[in-house]
Structure formats: structure tokens, C-alpha cells
Amino acid sequence: MAMEENKDTNKNKNINKEKIQNKEDIFTGLKAGNIAYSYRRHEVLNCISFELPKGKAAALLGANGSGKSTLLSILSGIRRSGHPSDGSIPFYSYGDGNQTSDLFRDKKSCSRIISYVPQEDPLMPELSVKDNLLLWYSGSRKNFQSALLSPAIAALDISSFMDRPVKALSGGMRKRVSLAAALINEPEVLLLDEPASALDLSFKAELRKYLSSLRDSGTTLLISTHDEEDLDICDIAFLLKDGKLTSISTALRGEELLKLIK
Image (cartoon, rainbow, N blue to C red; front, side, top):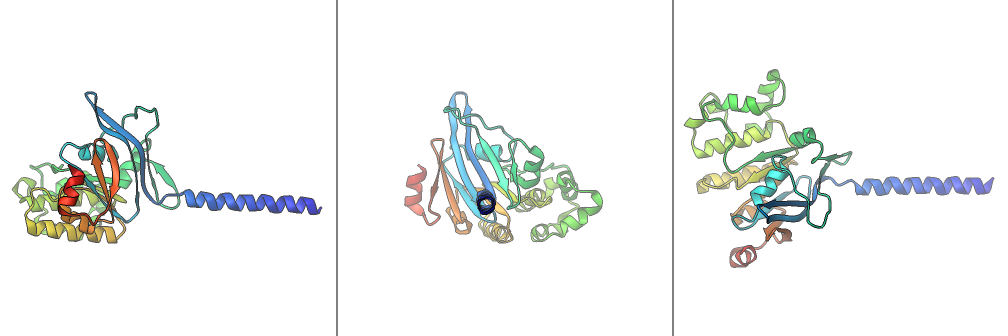
């Protein structure tokens, strides 16, 4: 009888140990590995792997043509990852602490969790701001006004030009609307491809302040950038060079940073 009790006790210990181990294995945030992409036999991305914890902001640095936009388009679901030459399998997942979604296979979860702001705004210039946002909104029309009142959208201050056609807006206003379109469905992760390009200095500073507040509210950010000032709002920095992704210090500036990028 004692031996049976010891077996049951050991069994329970093993079960509890497995539960603890499984809990530790759940990654809360974005995780990708073995991502590859080639263009006309030119290897743009080679076994890209990284982790980005929930609620953190990461800068994605690299020279022009290094593959930053290609990587973001793969992570957003627009482009498919290739397979590395070593035969390893690409993976891409998001964990919220309760479950993990396979974002390469589950496109519905990918579109719900991930939102993407490309360099060129995705807006339809002939339509009004409101109609553009309705095109991007996945909820019911009756809930649209409530979605506009969410803190992330309200902070963009676009209510005064909702009825104006996008083609009549300034560059800064269009950027606000592009961000609103990306955030209207309250994604967990926001991918941004050089969001401050072609904007004046005052709006760049305003945009950084806004992105910092998004991060503080729990949104995970991956920002492709050429502006070292963007490192001020980032917890992590990645360098994409020669098809490889490496982690670098967010404290790097000036010539020291340029030497790494070149």
C-alpha cells in the first residue's frame, strides 16, 4: 500500500512539474524563426529568428535594400516566407499567456493580432477618411463610432476631418489616418515601416510620443527606421545586414551606429 502511495505521489509530482514546465514554455509576445526569402537567386533573408515580448517596442535597423520591408511584409502576412537552405522549417507565433497562435497557418489570427503600416499609405485617396476607416474596420457598422472613441484612435485627433477626402489631406494628416486604419481593430502587434519618413520634425516628435504611449498601453511595436531618435522609444534594437538579424544596443548613436549598419 505504501509503495502504491509513493507511486501516486511521484506521478503527481511529475504532472505538476510538467504543468510548470508548460507554463514556462508559453511565450508572451511575438516569436519567429527560420524566416527566409530570396529574390532572383539573391538571398535577402537568411534564417531570421527573434523574440519580441508583449508591450515592448523594437527598432529594425539596416541599410536601404537590406530587406527590412520584405521582413515586415512576411510578418504581416502579405508575403510568404521561403525555406532556409539548411532545410529548417520557418515558424511564426504569438502567445498571450493562455494560448499560442501559429500565425503562418492561421491567417485569421494573424490579421486579428498583427496590423501593418507600410511606407506608402494604403488609403484610397478619393474616399473620405470615414469611408477609408470603414473599409479597414472588421466589426459591425453599429459599433464603428465606439471604435473611434478608443484611446488609441481618439489620441490621433482625426475627428475634425473625418468627412474630407484623403487626397485633400496633408502628409501628417494622412499618416494619422493610416495609423487609425491600422489600429481600428485593436491589434496586439503593430508593424511600422519607416513611419516618420517624409514628415516634418515637429510631427516626427509627435509621432514618437504617440508610439511611446501605445507601447506603454501594452501594444507591441516593431518599427523599421533610419532615424536614430526612434531608438529613444525602443526597448530592443535589431540590425538586419547581409540577410542576418542580430540584436544591438539601443544606446548606439552617430558614427558607432553607422559603422554597424554599413
